[in-house]
Image 1 (cartoon, rainbow, N blue to C red):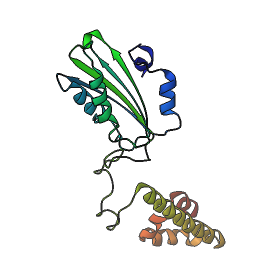
Image 2: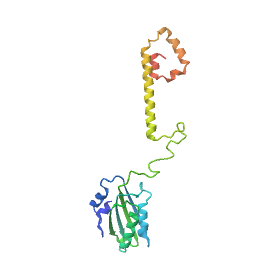
Image 3: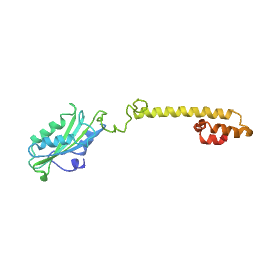
Image 4: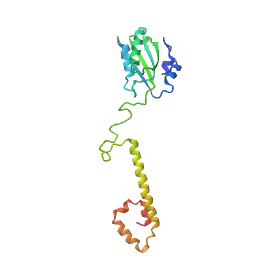
Amino acid sequence: ISELITIPGLINVDFADVKTIMRNTGSALMGIGTGTGEDRAAEAAKMAISSPLLELSIDGAQGILFSITGGPDLTMNEVSDAAKIITSSASENAKVIFGATIDESLTGSMRITVIATGFDDRRPANFGTNEEALPNNNFFGGNKYTPSSFLRKTQKDDEEEEKKFKQFTQKTIINPPIPSSTKEEVKVQTSKDDSDLEIPAFIRKKMGM
């Protein structure tokens, strides 16, 4: 982006242009494409808007800023061809700003930088998720859970467990202490019952179990 606004060109792009495109527009993407030969304009434009590094599609963009850098042989027809490709998928009412710069070292080739903004809150199907890591239909009794619903279910289970624990502790406090003469007998009886494994360790210790 710094190159767009600091390097002088035939058609300059400044910070105000970048600010205009990016202000209050939500998600944004940036792509760079290069092309050589007779179809360099189309090649560079298509590469700039279809980079594998892009997380969003340019479809429906409300604002587009692109800068074309080429050698002394750069023509306005090539600029026009690139602009048509870049803006073809954008919103009909999109605001478009472009710049053009001459670089002597790019004779016979072209570089295009695109910044697109103002998308709906969209993501590609495989963006931000790992399908292998998500629960499938065979998990949890055949139900499919999203992370949020799974979290809600976990919290609900915790609340139920806490309620049961409070009921148990209240019952323990209300019941009279076990006489010392029968404590050993109780210990023998409960040690044969697996139910004491469900009682927290600090309570079993307090009860002499």
